[in-house]
Image (cartoon, rainbow over all chains, first blue to last red; front, side):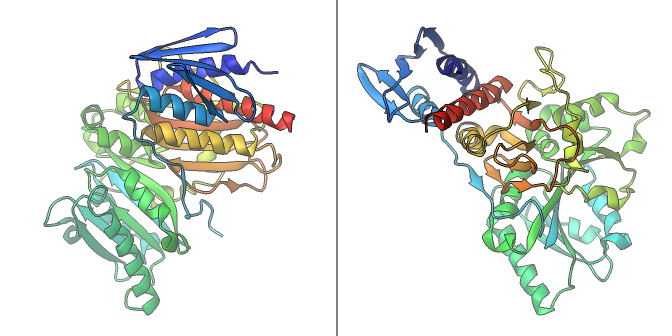
Length: 96
Length: 335
């Protein structure tokens, strides 16, 4: 069984570097605390259907995937980031 | 399908000289050339002689930022005229970009138009690099770094003007784009067959180079880092990757790092397709549909993903793939 909390802790730590956001990520057993600027986020595994719960200023928000978790975290700590969506081009890689 | 080749390279790096030589060779008869020049009055098209079977069209303005839509229209127009018989029935298209152009939006334009995709296939990117000034240009001009990063072939021009092989430049090019062969050229003299045969899906071509990517972390002293911003790294996976994990991984990369993902290419052992690896290939957030090979090109069945990126730490990509794979496996088990 993978240490999912550990994997997400590592991912969030790497995310701050990738996003060039100054902050800190700490793990305490099954909870992760992410601090960046004035924001403090508490992350923990959520009850189904949510896989994760993000608590900000006492309010819980559920997310269903790691992709959703990263999206929410980034919106909270890096609101100026402009996302781009994956686009699968119609042009084929291999000619028929 | 008609192959489209993109010829790029910084100002003065010898693109037009190279193109002029190519168009005189029999292998490049029946070529439609689209030249983009920055500025209102173009000259390059007057400097190129072609055979009777080829023709040159000119666009002015910077292709990557102002007239990308014009490129799509121009391509559609020459296809229509080819069908009508009012131009030579060309066998290939070469787009020569302005030396100032960021090639990524141009590749997006070629890859992303539904109508063009039925007729055209991106055959590869050739980037010219000046052997004399190339190192200096790469230091000072970010667009030149992107031009090198997206290349399938690098042509080292003016190599006759340097006393010895510019090893520092060769190292820099290898660091920025290790899978692109570097081909020396003097006065544009080069074997055409070596230039636009990239066959980016072909395991005997680019993917053979992927197989040579060292299976190691480049660590703190990273020879694959340029300027501390653009660098190349590879992720290697021993275990098959579930298709949905790969999709989610690419989606998150595009969402959070799309602009900085200069090029991603790879061969992937898909869990649901053990005998037919998938080839993936993308420029920033735009990807070709995965191409499934009929078989593995060698005994090496590791998934290999090669990134050429700006400000994208390897650790982020690796941690992301690990976390998503774990999530997908956990979800699969619980179902």
